[in-house]
Every structure is written in C-alpha cells, then in structure tokens.
Amino acid sequence: MRNKWVKASLVIVAAVIVVTAAAFQISKSRTFQFFGEIVPRVNMRQKVVALTFDDGPTPGVTEEVLSILNEAGVKATFFVIGAELERNPEEGRKIVAAGHELGNHSYSHKRMVLKTPSFIESEIERTDQLIRQAGYQSTIHFRPPYGKKLILLPYFLARTSRKTITWDVEPDSYPEIAADSNKIVAHVMEKTKPGSIILLHVMGRSESLKAVKGVIAGLKGQGYSFKTVSEMLAMTD
Ligand SMILES: [Zn+2]
Image 1 (tube, rainbow, N blue to C red):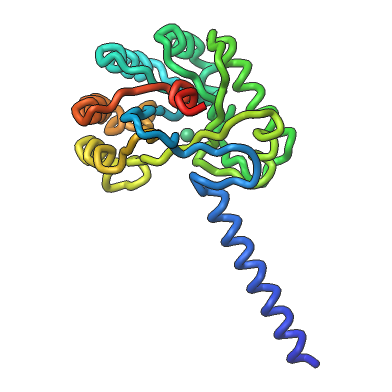
Image 2 (tube, rainbow, N blue to C red):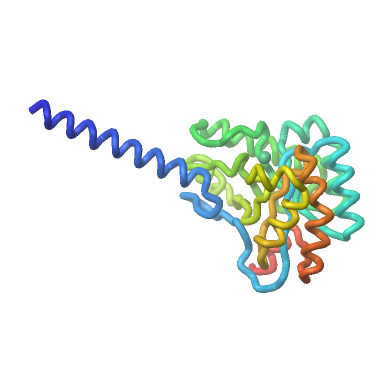
C-alpha cells in the first residue's frame, strides 16, 4: 500500500517538473506562443531587414542613434519602455519626428509571466498612450520584456489584435559577443537573412551602440536595405 503512494507521488512530482520545464521553454520561445501572432522574422526573399532597438528612450543616447541612422538614411524601430518615455518625452518625439517606428516594450519592463490580467493590460495601455503622446500615429506593435510570455499576455495581445514582435538575430544574448562591438557586427553578418529582425540594446550597452554603424555598413555591402518592422510586415500582406 505504502509503496503505491510513493510511486504515485513520484509520478506527480515528475509530471510537475516536466510541465514546469515545458512552460519555461515556451515562455522564452522567440517563435511560439499560445495565442495571437508572433513574428521573429518576416518570410521574404528580398534582401530587406529591420533594425530594432530595445529599452529607453535614454537622453543623449537617443540623439546619437538618431544621428547615425540619419547619416546612413536608415529607418529603424524603437521598442521603448513606458516609464522611460514618460521621463523623457522629448526623446520619444525626436524618434517619431525622424520618421522611425515606435513600439511598446511594456511600462515597467517586468517579466510578464505570472502577472494579473489587469497588470498586463495597464502595462500595455499606458505605454501605448505615451507613444501616441509622442506623436506616433501608425499601428503599435508589442515586444515583451526579456521576450517572456506565457498565457495571459499573448491572450490579451491576441484579444486586442496586437502583434508580438520578437527577433531572429540577437548578438547581445551571448556575453562573449556582446562585450565586443566587432564581434556583434560579425555575428549579425553571419546570422542575418532576408526578412530578419535584428535586436540591439543600444540604449543601455555601449558596445551595442558602437556596433550600429558597422552593422549598417556591412549589411548594405551585402545588398540589404532597411525597413521598419511595420514596413517589412506590409511587404508580405
Ligand atoms: Zn528590454
């Protein structure tokens, strides 16, 4: 009798471990979520890519990035944090005025798993409002902080017809590469393909910022042109 209970408990413990491990893997997947559309790259043959910058907008850095993009004639997509945009509204307006895309990267940049529906809704709606106040008028896409999502976040995004935009090129995720702007450029050159969405953390990481010029020059050299995420999505619609 006792043996039976021990066996049953072991089976339950094992099942819990398997389900938890699966949920963890799914929560950080760049290419799968339970509800709605997730876009890690756009399926196309043309040599087009989207540069995306997460976090901020940070005073000083924003101007520097904008000037690099302006010189290169490149339009990019900035996934900004609501709280930062609230603190630095002028930077948001500058990004919009220069013709770039603003995306929603939540209000407080917390992992949006195991959170209440009202928390998720307020994080997204508040940030959308701030993005509108910065003057951005087109569709606002969402990128989850740390790429984390499980059930309630995708459910809310799907219910409100918002797309989840992730990425397929992420040099900053490898500490050894992230520490050296030359390695970041090399990694991007190696991994990028037509329709790629490239993620760089220019607002908070100096090596990432330093790599932008090299990434643009290198990809241009390979015949790539640059679009915002929405422009690239529109090419396949
Ligand atoms: Zn982020």
